Amino acid sequence: MTFRISFIILLLALSVPPCLAGTQTVERRVTVAVLDFGDSETGRRVADRVAAIFKEAGAAGPTKVALVDRDLSRAAALGAGYSGSLNLTLKEARDLGAAIGCDFYVIGDAQTVPRSSLAVPLYHEAYASIFIVSARTGRLVMWHRPFAEAATPEEAEAKLAPELNAHARLYRVAVLRAFEDEESARRRATTAGDAGDAGDGAEVIDLSSDEGAGVHVDVRDPAPYRRLRPAYPDTAERAGAEATVDAAVEIGADGEVARVEIVRWAGFGLDEAVTATVRQMHFRPATREGVPVLVRVLLRYNFRRPTKDKR
Figure (cartoon, rainbow, N blue to C red):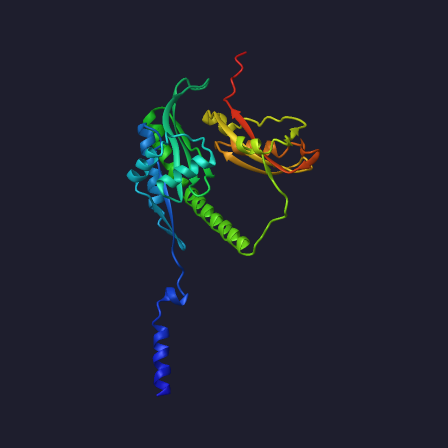
């Protein structure tokens, strides 16, 4: 009898589903929405191609990439009041992602336009500005601007299609890496919370909003020893980008920059230009009753395309 009972228990153990026995990797699902890339024919075709790239992604290891229905995501974005901007705050980006109901979304612009140069009086450029955004954090995961030039609009757009296909893996990898990073950050935050982590005890006085500045009227603002202007990068020049970049900057009691977070992004290399510039700055520290304190401030940079010297 003892042998028979043991044998039955063994059979039951073998019949436990793999997922319950811990021998099967749980599949994860990452949802991606692709919005319209403007009203032009080029924009519609490029958005369709980018959507196809994510639809074809399928499973990548334990993570499956799933494309959100285009009509549903388009309607949700319209209902949220999104009008095609590529220059969003983190809150605006999170709100748009919440309205769509996805993990990541892709926005952009694509056109075929006539160009001219000293060497070639007339040619055509087909380009696509592709922005991948995290719906959870509102951060710009990556931007990319492939382009192609040819004598006719049709030839230029035909040459752009292979450029998109060649970078298909780049787009998918960017989403999957961002997903893994966000999952890791969430696990670390949960672990820190469970452990009762109170940090290093340093209070950050938030002056980065009107509300925060209004509360801390007894704090004297930090002042830069020298104001630095970010360079307008060639990548932005190529795109003709004009945008505003906001950086939330933590400035220590020693007047040194402790942390920089882009809270309104613009892509095209502008965010990186702001971050690099801010990290070079030195400040007279903020003070409260004459004592230096750690503060967070908002630094805003407005970028306009430089006018060319006609001389």
